[in-house]
Length: 295
Image (cartoon, rainbow, N blue to C red; front, side, top):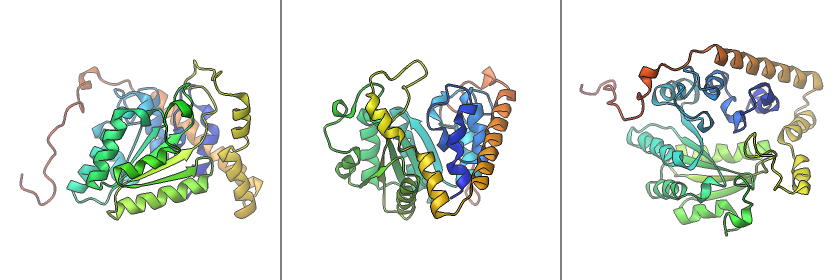
């Protein structure tokens, strides 16, 4: 696990102010960094080729194929919005049909967990034992709704049992705990043992969007969770357990800064989408014959 990738969220303020939703995931890879930056400002070089809402972090079929093949060798979606959870499950089903050892990783929030799409997606995934990992970022507020008004169960991970697969709850501010649980869930899915729901408990430290001052979050709660800053915690771990010195950490930070600034410049220099391509990727298109298959 690259230290550089784990420090990448430290400098997301270098990007435009609307870049609020899970940029650490989007920028963890050098290639994805440029594609995601372009996606953020809806340029044609982005993962969504300028026609997909930038906060969904979901690739168009054309861009996704390149990303899956060359970067991850598995499919990763970043819905946040409940509507794309069934799409993530559909990817997992496609992997099963094609006999591909890929895993679909689906991120969503505690607010999305209350929507029907989420239940349908997880139920179908459980019935078919599909290779998908559901990662719930439980930031304790669905916009302004606190957890006691969101759900009646003790933990969102408890819901997994009703769908017939495992649920795990981890401290979302502990980088190594999240990494280890995610790695285990992905390896399990890749081995054919079905889905896992990983609930990462954290707190959204800012408003839902730039217009929201989060006045509804108790000040004491924000102060408590501020002490659990995952970047600060991991820096301390690197210093104490991995013998990383300040010069090494500072050098990594400067490298990440440069990476993000370069990605932003590439995004801003990318062309706007061609209006003639507006409907491309909206409907399913026939796939070309695979090697060895009849035309």
